[in-house]
Length: 388
Image (cartoon, rainbow, N blue to C red; front, side):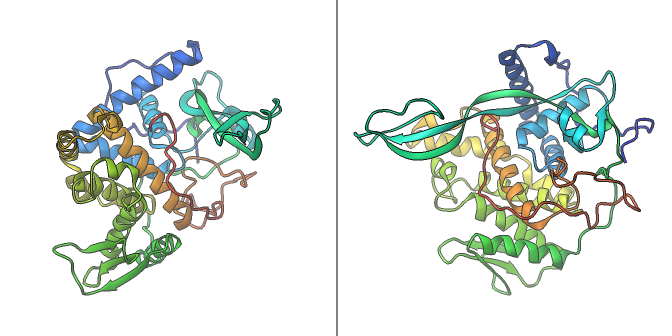
């Protein structure tokens, strides 16, 4: 339960030399620029240090309903204020709808949100497509292709962590030891995700090279070693699901780096980051196993990119820097993770109070076990935020 009087745990995010931006006094354009600069600084640290990358994944396991970029921004702003890590975040009015109010004197946290508009789409007589705002006069002779909501730009959105509010008690996730999920149950949930994507999961004694798991896109099959413990099987399946969602033949980013074998450094980091975050959200901490897996990934990706450029690829489509690569990886990992967690239902709210929870009052023990979430809604990875 959120309590103003309790001593708050300090953020694990490393100290930053950059002062907290006075975003409340900025124009919308200046605010987006300040947030983007702050995100750039965070990703620079994550590229250079596996431990910083792991902190981002830890936060993403709690705030998995937010984009990776916004998770990083929330972590940074809370750390700059010397307060606890963000756990449950909502706007001013959203907190009021859930029976809580923002404490007097609290300053907003800022995330990047899309500006959207409802547009009417038409096909012109020459075959080209055109969009206009709903209600405007349609082009002469155009065929109506229906309405759709499109992103027209980006804005800063003010939000507040639950620790900045008071009112109706809430179940609030904390980074403390808690009973982990039964590995076999999580394995079954992950197998359901694979099935939704058209893949069968097989547990057998066959081994491909030195791997404990393998994804065959041609046969739509995921194989997991039968010799593994239940927890290791679950970890391997989570890793392979990262490949299923991110590294198929239609992976646009993968095509820029050639085949999966050619950009294996990037693919393996993305898959292991997905696995780490999924397990962490369900109370299974992989610890140093994933940390060592991530070490040195940036240089491997840069090296692959240099080889692609030498081979004559279109360099305008390739990430221009390590930070661009980190931004791409973080966005893809957190989008894939969200798609999986919406099916596996980890304990917690994922950083956002479900709209269905009109009055989420505190029940007996402070625990997330058994707390319901919105029904499953599996979508392909969608990277939210400007390039994040």
